[in-house]
Image 1 (spheres, rainbow, N blue to C red):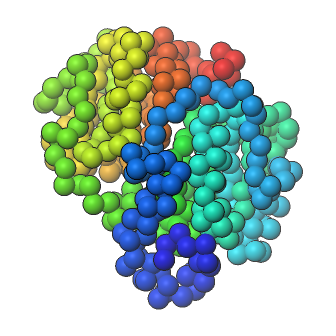
Image 2 (image 1 turned 135 degrees about the vertical axis):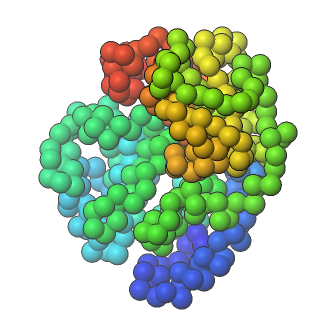
Image 3 (image 1 turned 30 degrees about the horizontal axis):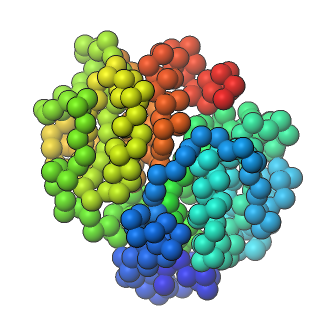
Length: 358
């Protein structure tokens, strides 16, 4: 059964195991949902609940089964490979609420911990750290510079590397147990070699049948037709594109919490904003002038989480995307960065955060 703590890496050499795991995928996701219930309650079936995402007062402590942060990734990768595991580099902050959520909720579940320890070695990197790290290519730089180079804009970010040292998957931000379990299996069972993570998740997602009437509305959303082309005639306002879907609890949380705050509503009033159903065949002209559909564009963008918020500048260039759990504090910072046009002087959001000292 997918996500079983007893599962081993034998599926890499036994095709029958992979066939069996694929056949049971939908059931595995359902079990993942059921396992998430005790920690979150029946009102949060996908593991997403509203929480205070302001920085924590108490610094985060790594689990004792994380690798000691000697920060020599070549050595860590060799050790993981010898043990039949893959290497994960965890980028985090000691007071990051989302990092605390990963440790307290996801790694608070014994099945996730057991499965992770069986298949992965995790090396922690502090995105504000000044200690030197040697990356998989042998380059030495500080933790902070390494995090900046890897554009880990939202913590926790986890980068999964396979036995060859190639990147298998990158998670930006916090994902609830449902998607997190799937991500672990996606890499451990080598699904990344023949399909995207979005396609892998979609095979076990039965929520594609809901129509646009199930989406949360906002006064600042512009109605169709969705002609977002800015390639020929630039706009004088940035663009926010909300990718959502029906029967989406995480979408409900975003609309019921952060998007009810006056400060957030005021800032979105300075944007052009549209809402697209991630499964819809509604026609869309993208910010760079390509004709497509909402569903096809979401697939091209590699989106797998709803709600995902993508931000574009006046000329249609993507500035930033928030495609993981987001609350008031993180969303406010993103909106401040874009509405102030800080991207004109500092195109790297994380480097801007460093310069602003928050």
